[in-house]
Amino acid sequence: MLSIRLMEIKNYFVADLILYTIASYGLCYILMEAKVLNFIRDKIIKIKFFEELLNCSLCTGFWTGLIIGVFAPYNNILFALYSSVTCYFLYLLNYILLYKVYPTPEDK
Image (cartoon, rainbow, N blue to C red; front, top):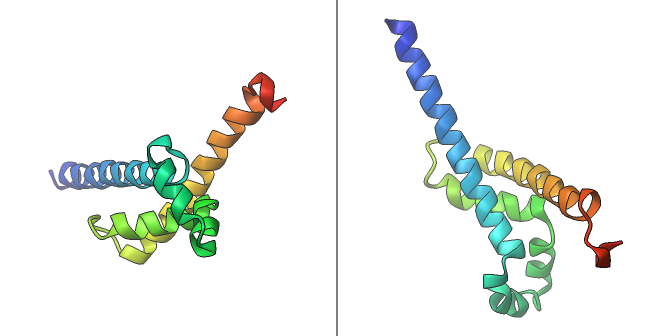
């Protein structure tokens, strides 16, 4: 009975972590690439700090993880670090798939 209860708690935390991870990556991708925010991004990147921040998925992932970590039941700083690494690898995988594996004619 106790082992079933522990499995339920463990599965809940894994599902929770996956949800917050997807939310963090989604926010990171929206801030860096989404066409919806082009008009805001064009104005913000005139400041050097924001230009460097929005060109780095590791940096943007950290700050999105810090923001989402406020709502997550995890340690805020640890979730921000975890989010940073996760956003970096997912963004890298996305870049490889878009530009290396399936390039468009103008990318060649």
